[in-house]
Image (tube, rainbow, N blue to C red):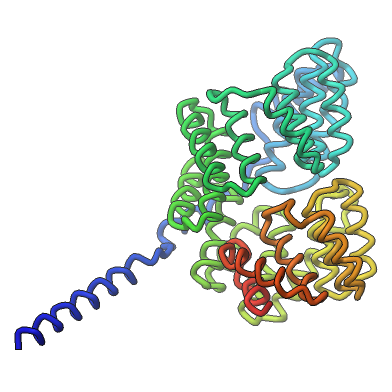
Length: 427
């Protein structure tokens, strides 16, 4: 009898513990973020902008005015995603650089960063090198050179520039050290340095640094499976900037990938897309629609992307997304041509992944395999690129490699999302 009682008590304890474990599964709450979805569109003018714009109209060689107006145009671009503001910022900076008698290095760095936003990385590199020759703001230029070389896939050069600005008290160094460790696949160390940068940003009272570090740390937490931490930081970012589209998209991804609630994720995305024009949002909407089995909505979102991406002002910005789009609609020849162009623009494992995948989808699996072995294997930890490599290995019958990557990718299913999860599990 006593033994039976003990067994019963143990069983009840186990059941209660199991219930508590289930209760601990994190879920978002609409009440946390609803008020931000209704926030007003970003204003594309300001008293500050009008002041400097009027000075420029009075004196077209007003270099400080041109730089300040460019900064405002960049802010408008970040808030709206409208490419015209990025191009207007470019023109203002080019005029400032042309007119400047002093401080050219600063204008060169600002214009190089504008080029980076446009994915004109080789032009940005030329400007950064020219700024370095000017001799002023050396650390800022070295940091810029690290950024550009990372984008171009020149990792040894990038690391040398990172070593040259070493300062554990500097926000700029800490975020780049975090990026470097993430590139090497050491996410825990990357998070540690980004947390240090976040703490620095909080002490600085600099709104832009705090907002940037908050959303980037939220991203890192998500990649590490720390979904609740990620969610709280996206909410924190929205406290700082209620209109921040990036943080809202982060919450939409949690709702979609973690909670598998496509309807709510689409509601969030629609609220973003009323005010922000980033083409990535059309592709995410298409992916969520595919997950929900809503083929007509998926096709509509893809069609919207196709119509917008033809704008010549986008230049090279959406090449990678466009390759994925073209492969999805079976336009493989055009996808291959664009993937080759992207590799020429920047030769990274990720761009080679797109090229290899394009060859695979065109039926040239041996060429795809050669690219994977030469440019991807052991050179990246990026889940989307590794999933492409896994498909190439599978097509070529290298099943051991497939299983190794499948095991690694299983730990990145949240980052990849439910649609890609299906492909990973079927490898």
